[in-house]
Image (tube, rainbow, N blue to C red; front, top):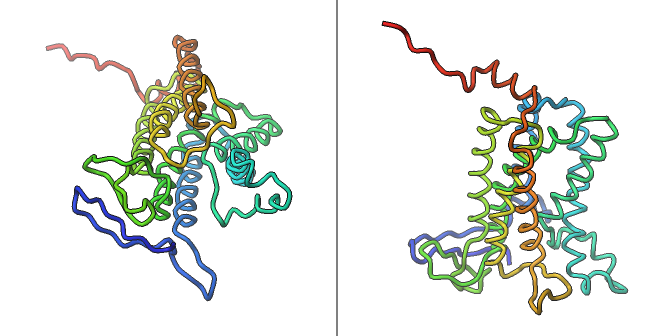
Length: 291
């Protein structure tokens, strides 16, 4: 289906949306792809403007970005296909793995793939890893916050039925009022972007601190929201007799890892960030003038 009538019944909002942004002949450009590209462009632009603040060479980092885009797409597709093993890894179906135009990309796989590809290039270029992770994770939050609206245009990544005031329904949800999970994650990621950006600008104490904060911030949200999703990927086996959502388990692990790293480094302060705050006058107390 390419057209949806979206309703927020308790708010009285009605929208007619199309998955197709524009068409050239028989070739269709979908809003999902357009929105993802906008998010990607803004994420790259942020990294370009702020790389120096994190003591990162932008020219070298751009090489990481180029490779990371490619490996990110590969990772997103493989993550999805691995947890739909019976649909893709059977005789006669292997070729379907490359058919990304039919859907099936997982955001965690994209993040993992992009990081692996980008960090390999960073190591080859003998770059420091933690500063790259700091600026990259803030950039990711931009891309994630904007990119989730592609799910809205496709009417996917929604949650279970709900009677909350902001419930959403359309043909894509079988006209059942559901949690707009795309909206939850979009707002959370954009809020996280602003919080981590300003923390990094005025309060960051060491390389890697923003990265650890990202693990906690995004992991916490995804742990909760993934539990509402109806299209989650599940582990191929049960834990304690219960089916486990892959991304929910991974998110919970990221929260724990992030918290442990923040606690371990709680008294750490790198000279680069101390000097940066000193130059900006951050944290200096104003002297009271004597009468």
